[in-house]
Length: 131
Image (cartoon, rainbow, N blue to C red):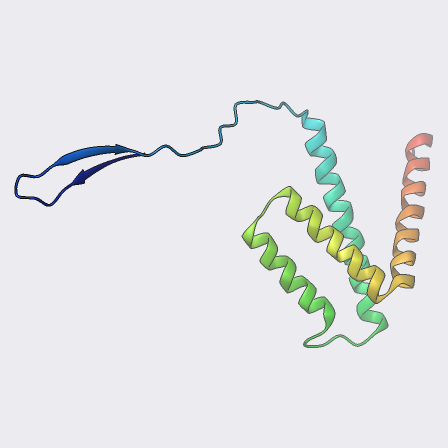
């Protein structure tokens, strides 16, 4: 960084100050195959579907109203995504949702997971048979 400094004297003394500072330079290029972005998108969509099924079942199983834990969780997740809308933040929010599901309704979460596994098995066998 460079600065020009004046002394304030009647015969001004002008000096150039050079202040070194450390700056991180990233000079490496990482090529990522397009397929990994596609897999990531599919995983995020699958997690969102699981969460939506869980929340629907959760809301049917107990009273939901102002100040319920789901509302607080969603509010904190939205705040996180506003601060840092990255893939790492998405992964963190998915983890928080899973922790919430396990803590608040573990039996319901197991049912949702079992249901998604059965659906996956049905889809896989349909693809294998060509139906």
